[in-house]
Amino acid sequence: MLSNSPTKAIKKLQRGLEHKFLWVAYSGGIDSSVLLHAVVKIFGPKSCGAIYIDHQINPLSKQWSAHCEHVCREIGIRFLSRPIRLNKGNLENQARLARYKEWAKLLRRGEVILTAHHADDVAETRLWQLFTGRAPIGIPHTRPLGLAQIIRPFLSLKRTDIEVYAAENDLRWIEDCSNKDSIYDRNWLRHELLPITRRRFPKAVENLANLKWPELPTFKKEALPIASASHEMNIRAWLQAYGLFPRDAQIREIMRQSSLRDRFTSVSLSKFLSVRSHQGRLFVVREKEPIKHRHIRVGEFLNLDSGQLRWRRSGRGFSAGDLVFLGTRKGGESISVGTRSKSLNEIFRESQVPLWQRDVWPLLFVDGLLESVPGITMSDKYFSNEKDGTYVPVWEPSE
Image (cartoon, helix red, strand yellow):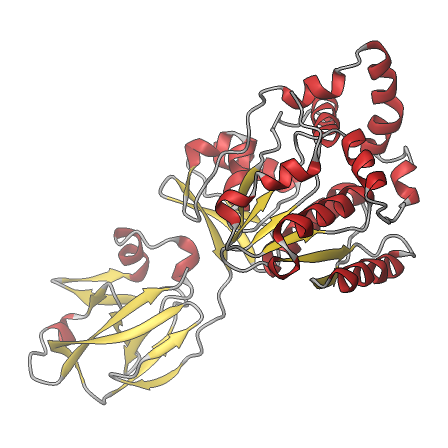
């Protein structure tokens, strides 16, 4: 059965969240206004704040931000307002993804953001998923959001419960006229389909909200086995662990490429991020700055965007203080190892270096000859150089 008290729903959060800072996703509408009021009432103003995301779609959005700031100032809580820009296309979906991205950027480790999704929202989402051919993914009460956590305490409440609470507590809220425009899918479901459905099936919303649909699984910020990439919800959940919310087309492309045999997956998520495959797993890869080619001294520590170059005293290798040339691959490099010359590509393959790391892996040259691939191998000439004060380079790639 659905609970009918916003206050009770927030009181349930007290256990386990007493010492955490709570952010409320605050739009100024009735749902988030009720959530904010109930949270401040139970946790107190020092334990919470509000975040307003300005989608810059409605010309009144700055006035709404000012309203939200005024309310927060009155009750004595922190307030943040962040503008975002949307591209042409499905503004409804873009706005949702952009909100989550901004929250993930703003929240610090251990913080919590609360949203006012309720049972009617769940019913609308499930109908929308069915009608648009999306995977039937449930809306979880709690899940990770980057370094933080998102909680939806009102999932057991109906819209009428929220309206009653707002009236009883004489709350002020914003009425966004676009919420009544049935050109948007969810508004059509809310204002056209569900009222008709309720007349025939009075418990339609409650039954839809209580359906046991699969929720997004929880993943850590680590590589995803390609076998798991055949399910849309797995990819979404995995990327959400990184605070990423890809477009539907990107999800489909990851699934398509991951299903192909003998092919490397490479799907761009943004200007600097992509999903790449290596040894049967998917990785979120950040594009690294190129290494600046230059002379360095043996023993000189380097902290680069692509990793750290350290030196280990070894009793063999390069002599301390000598000059070596720091470079990266251009193609055709080889190094004398053992009894033969080995190509750099062969060394990278044998050492299972991912493709995206190879162009930003440092190489050490002396007199134009490749003498070391730090962290992997060294030429015979320097490996056999046994004397005090010699060092071996160690490379630690960044994530």
